[in-house]
Image 1 (tube, rainbow, N blue to C red):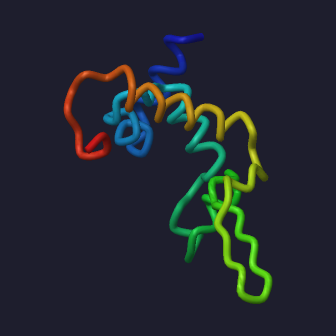
Image 2: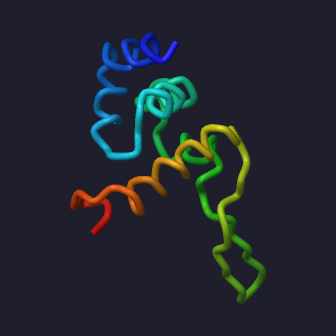
Length: 100
């Protein structure tokens, strides 16, 4: 099964580009591709809202606070992206623009 997933990810251009980031493997890239599908159909930040990665905003009169992420949408995809980011920031030793 792992071999099949790796082959599927290597055949897809978007998945190959995602896997260039350390911490992102075939499973994360394929699940991102399946969740978002085609980015061209979104005109604004809708795909990130679908994943629940937009900050919660509390606005009331003079108070304007941004809080934690809203946590709506696909929980497993959000968890996979969190694990990939954690791996990239903490485990990978190679320098990158994302880490800087």
